[in-house]
Length: 586
Image (cartoon, rainbow, N blue to C red; front, side, top):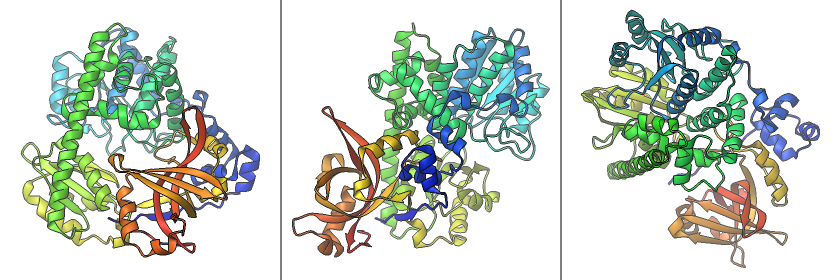
């Protein structure tokens, strides 16, 4: 067990001025400044996201060329949309397919099989599409690196439009149009849209280009919102607008997309609020599970179902949910096996390069992430692929995984990724060489293995109010680039701490100047029990009446129960406190 590092965010913004101009608490202004929001216009847009705040799609490089090429193809050519097997690729495929079919196009879709074909455009698929008569290929969520494959498509008489959000390589594919805001010469002001966000923007622009109504706007906005959350892109600028407005529409009409509505109903959320948590941890995993274990075609088919296809919608939704349960089981079993192996080995190397030939390759990234969370170490998990070892890696803030792997690129058949995550394929005999090279060149210290909790501000107990909770809720949705605000209070008096072990939950009752405040924590029971049993700080922190003094990191939230509404805190970490000095418990 390791302890977290509590790191205070810093800003030099004039918080008093922000508070006065925006008519918000200084606490809220502090959180916004910590997110890089410094101007009045940016702050107003952040506090009140509006669909009118989206940028002009035609500012994207090649957007006009793409619209002209697609519009030309609609009445006279066979079009294939080539997507990807994750939620973002699925949603972007559905958006373009539904629109093009409504506009009268002869249009189908193709999603590569994760295990059989791998990510992105492949030569075999291009050849099959040429044989089927495809004349225009539209890639979504892939294509920016497919130079050879698009050269092949051109030689077979297929024209290509690329809609992608990944980093472009030095050489660009010879496509008819490339829409990717991350191209260095693209002047579009926001670079962080996911593929479904781009598909939504292109869909609206195509309707305007062809002078037809964009009747699917609200439906596509909800699909784009789901994809934006599942793809974990930065929730700023247009992404914030898409998620905020999309969730408002989805909560007003859970059946706006009948297939998605069936999945929502099956998961028990037809009469509940759809939040960022619901999308990220309840709905999204079911969509992703199809591409991991079967074919993402199942999810695409579900989302293309009409309202009258009730039986098929229910059948597909159940199949997606069952696949997700299988995925969870495979993940749990693999985490247990790997954890047992690591425990038996004793001291851990700085970088974990683990092999588990029984692991399903589609869950390698999830398992690597869990092991990284449990150990604090960068982790690569490899399993048996088709004639080679394939796997995924997940890293920590102090270790750039992509750079480390790039330095050993001669060992790989294929690899790619970024600082925090990567995928790789290599011969089995190269694994010991990779493990040795990564650890020999690693400069991580014990301090680096302690996860960081970024804190926005110190709060006094009397500042934790229902009014503050209401105001902070205006900063939602929370996610990458806009994390949920976290605060710290030192020396909070916990009159009682109750453990509900079967739910791995702690219930705190804090008391300050006669005012009671409820706190709740998930997954910290072992942390509390270990601390209570073995830390001398507890003796000094224990109050004679039986309570303890705790330094607490928390978020502020509203608790509604039996018609009563009050503020409570969600405890993310704590340490026993002595005389105002911070003592880590374990």
